Image (cartoon, rainbow, N blue to C red; front, side):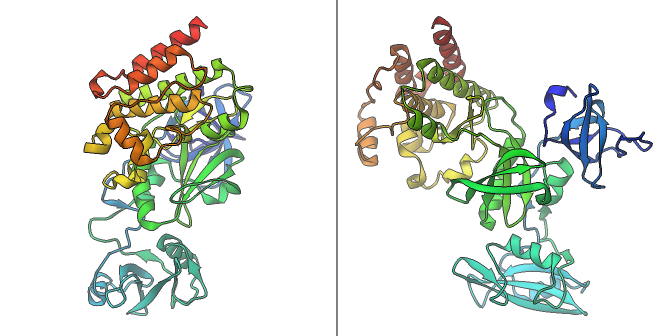
Length: 444
C-alpha cells in the first residue's frame, strides 16, 4: 500500500500473519483491523492501535491493505433483533430454545406506537412493554432512551429493571447484522476513542458535532432515529466506495445512542457562511474560481461513477483548513430528500425535469451546479432573491433565468446559463465544466 493512502485515524486490514513480533512491533493475524495512530520515523512503518487486543505497536505499511467498501443490502440491519408486528405467542415461538438472555423486540399489538422487549429468563419468556412518550422510550419511566438501539445497548451492559441482562439477540428471519459487516470490513469505530466537543451544525435528522477520534480532529453526525439510522447506513455504504480529494472523507461509523458518521473535519464550515462572513473585500475572484473548480472536480468524479447527488448547493460544500472546497452528503442525498415527497426538495436548486417528472441525473446536478455558481459569485446570497418558491417554479418553467451577480466574470455567467438549458442534453458535462474553469484560472 502506498504511504500516501495512510493517514492518522484511518482503519486498515492486515494482509498476513505476524506472530513473532520484535520489540516495539505488533503481533497480528491476517484480517485483523488496526487504526493508524501516526507515521514512524522509519520509512514505511506506522504506529497503530490493534482492535482485537487493544495494544499499540509498530507495523509495516506493506502488511496493510485499505478497507473494502461496506457490503450491506436490505437484509442488513442495525436492529436484526427487531421483528416488527408479531404477536406475543409468535415471539415465544421465536425464543423457543429459552436460552438465558435470548431476546427480541416487537411492535405492540395492544398498544400501537409502543414496543415490547421479549427476553428469556429461567426457562420462561418475559414481555416488557416499552412505552413511547414525549419522543422517548422507557420500560420503567426512570431510565429513558432516544431510540431502540440505545435501549438495547444499555440493557446488554446493565441488567437495570430487567430480570436478566440481554445476552444474545434472536435475529428476524433473513435479517443480517449490519454491525458485524461494518466490523469485518473495518468501518466500525469504537466510541471509546471518540471525544465529543461543541455542536457545529444542526441537520434534519440530528446534530453535527466537532470532536476527535484517536486525537484526530473530526466532524460527527448523529442520526438518532432508528428507521432513519438504518436508511442512512444504507446510503453511507456509497461513501465507502468513493474517494476523491474534493469529497468529504468518511472515516467510519460508530454505533452508540443511534448511528454516528465520523467524517473529516472541515474547519472553515460551509461555503455559504464562509462567503457571507468574509465578503468580496476578503475573498478575491481567483478564490471563487478555485472553489468552483474544486466542486466541478468532485462532481466529475461522481459523474464518472454514475452517482447523482440530488442536493448540490453551496450549503453542502464545506471548506477545509487549507481553503479547499469539498462536497458533502454525496452518499446521503436519497435518504435526506425523500424524492417521492416533492415538498421536501430544495426547489430553487432543483432542475425542472426533476421537479416535474422526478428525473434525477448527472444533468440535473449540472443545473444545481449553475445555481451554486450564482451563490458563489454573489458571495453567498440566496438564489432567486425576493421570489417565493411558487414564483420560482412558475417563472423558470416559462423560461426565466437569473441575471448575473454583481461584477460576475462574464465567462462564468455564460457557464451558469449553459447549466440552465431547458433540455438536459444541451447542458455541459462536469468534465467540460472542469476544463472551462481550468482555462479561466490559467488565463488569469
